[in-house]
Length: 150
Picture: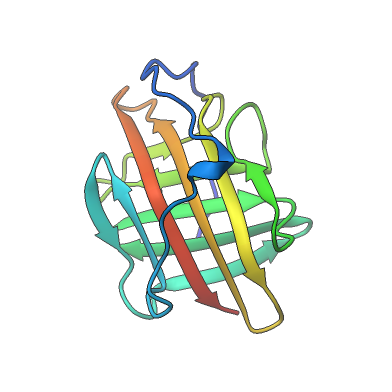
């Protein structure tokens, strides 16, 4: 799996940033990873999810024609981490089946909440807005969930 960054401009979606009290979704405990991409459900294929570490950066990723990666330098259980803004470690990315890459870097809306993180698995929730420099297209990734074996 390759990790990439795109330079982006300020989010022009002007969508409200959910407060931490709005973490009102969950998985069923069996799902590996899913999210809504502009309101359409995306689910990771079984066995196509992963957890990894590159130095101090930790990431979860899933693929099924499209791919989503959530990266942070801290995945402490109970923590809520910003994955938007000008960061090279904390960000969300989305790649569609046409290989058009989107990033939350320099956008103003995105968080990951770590529910569990132990030696055998990691579980959490996420959302972020992202933009492609190739097409200029904007995507809203909402109600994301992951439950990944390490």
